[in-house]
Image 1 (cartoon, one colour):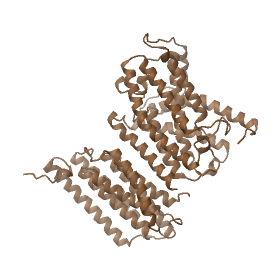
Image 2 (cartoon, one colour):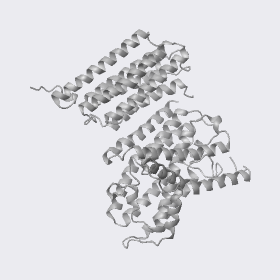
Image 3 (cartoon, one colour):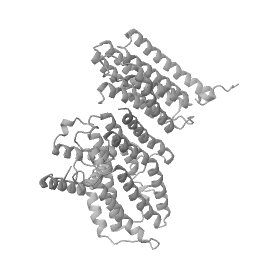
Image 4 (cartoon, one colour):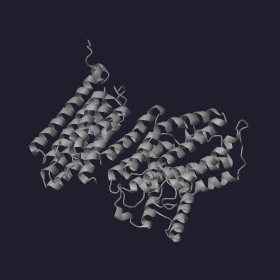
Length: 318
Length: 218
């Protein structure tokens, strides 16, 4: 496909994309926290609290440990940059910011960019030399090791069926060889959702609201960050939440009857609504379930891997 | 190839069956079993709808009553009474046996390719109904082989029974109702007896580990 698509459409696409990239990630977190609060019979912070928090953090003075090197300060920037890059590559909403064919959103590139962001977060956590940072880093890496096969296998199955490793083509709404493969889409979506619960350090893997440093995973790693540095790390994490939830939602969206999603507006509404409803679902899980014990976690991740194996079988057989 | 509703339901029941293998928490196992059987009930209703066999609706209702509602609740009650929460030492780690189950799903796909499907229900050349049935059978066998707790053995037996039932329903126009009802009654009685037996095992051995039942005790 070439760039001859008219300028108006590109403007509309990019404008909506930019707006959703700025608004959606913090809003998703806000909705998640609000729902959890309502479940616990609290009023809860306003929906836009993540925005206020970020604004507050950006105004504060930063404290950096005297043992920390330049790496500690630069890591959140790298993290955020990678996340912004990923937001252009991952098909997390129904619209494409970049017209097809200009950049190839290769699935291996995406997985390793996620790995790169994690690598720098882990390095920064180790850099300050705090014990909790080390804890968190070691756990994060262990979880990533277990989850990565599931994510890769899910995406690769879709790619194999579609005959391309370019995710923007795999997830495009034009007729491909994946059209109508509801079982494959659904299983891949389940696998991606379960793995993103672990990757995003949500409840069965990690309690994001815990006050006990010994049990933290993600929070322990950014314990030393403050002010603008913390704000950048938080924004990066918010975007990651929206990206991964959006990716698994896109899988579920392909299970819906295609005539419902024939026009641009319907898809845009469905994508946004989907991310928010997945956030609501996570809030439900976090209110009803408890954090799993660390030794029980591989059992949970095994479910994600099993989903990936199922979709692999379907991709082979169909 | 698009999955028809029939095939999607068959695969759903197989997948939910395999998920039983994934955890040693007996309560979670029971609820997975419930959903797994619910998918089979839906499949029975759907086959009844396609083949216009009215007696399948009655069979589905009976299965719903006995296997979805009564048996899991009864086993849950037994669990509470006997104070067993999880199957402590499985022979193979739970995640591994689940992945083994998923592989067996692939194997049963290959095995079932020679079995013709039911006229009118299956698409031309499709045999996913018997694939699901066989995979459920394998799941039940894995459950019985890899677990030690007597309750898991009962569950494994139930899953195998589900597989045989599904095979009969997907390959024929359903067995005569009398046979189905007789089977259901037998399963019900079997589960109740083994449930009560489990109490006695627990009382005299203070565990429900079937691998140690061969040891003599004075």
